[in-house]
Length: 515
Image (cartoon, rainbow, N blue to C red; front, side, top):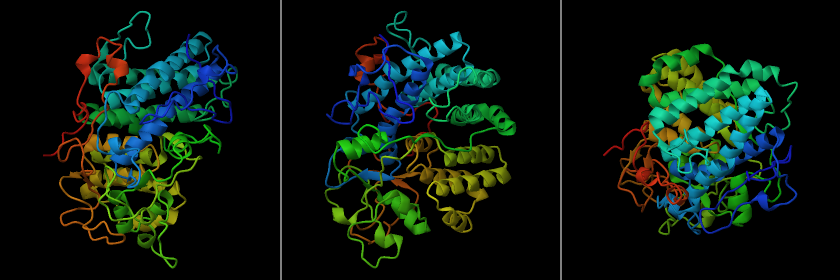
């Protein structure tokens, strides 16, 4: 029987199938609740697909991004995310298994049923959104794992051991085809709205098909930028055609109640019953402080030991070295900043700043620096607007963050890196793997001293550069490039074992590590 996940409208009641990084139990499985329906309708399937899409990416995706773009790190009095910080990620971990399992067993199965049902009913608005969400989920899977079951996926009766398709030549073109089909159907989708209203069950856009259309185009741009040289004409066409997303695509219908809040808040704060796991990382915090970037105020908590008369950000915020629990750090718990978390934090598929920076990058790569500058500045402003810090953005764009046409790509990607803190940070890791920006320095620390408020940088360290996270399982200047194929795949699919790769093996669209 197909697994049905029903989400009460107006309140995102559950996030389904999530498994913690350690031995904690399932986040919630509503299949055990006899009050939930056991038959599907379009109005139950769509919110289920929306919710399960963000269930894993809102927990594991956010944790991965936060740690690997060095916005956050493991607290020095707890151990919850040590294995994530030191790259000891195994195929048996709940971390990697839950992402795979949730996608193939829950989200994509319900997604396929939604598409089939809406096509039969000619409910093209549901069909269009279903196609776009399926494209997004396959896109995330192939960017996390590489080659994946695609052409034979979701057909277990016919293909109990689906083949693993090549990410570059089969999966990516297949996803682009899905998006093109959705875009082509937008007219029929608009016409179908009256007969098939979906404003109350579309948890991302409240039935706004114009926004879904813009997201589909922007997701195409994101994928084309994975291989710019091969896709120049397609990228130029998307830019000239307009209608790209320049807004947040997110879920934020959360409540301050068990299993009704932001999924990472539910796991990391409410379930673990500690606020000490995620602390500010020196790498990003020092960049904020050095540039007068006040987003540290929105992203980190003021330290308990801050002087009562503290007036500067440097006095109020402190980080610790990134990586495995830094037991040797002399910065006490009361002198380091927690990462801010709230039950109401949105979970994004794309955010406004990311969209603007993506357009800026495309123009920069095409050599159009006028438009690159325009969208770069829009990206910076959008990143600050998220925290109502418009004046700080204006100030920095006239100074430290002014557009530099001679170093346009680095300029754009550094600001994009900063903007991922607090918003779909996993995409920040993807971008870092794709472009090599920020660069990764080997054998160096951010600061000379770990002592509170002694901010002298280590000789040779350049702000806006990542560092090796202390003791880890990879070689110097190496980072994870993929998640390992989980045992859910290798034990139950005879085709899977030949696709097992080391976590530091680059995917086809990623730059090689510098030696």
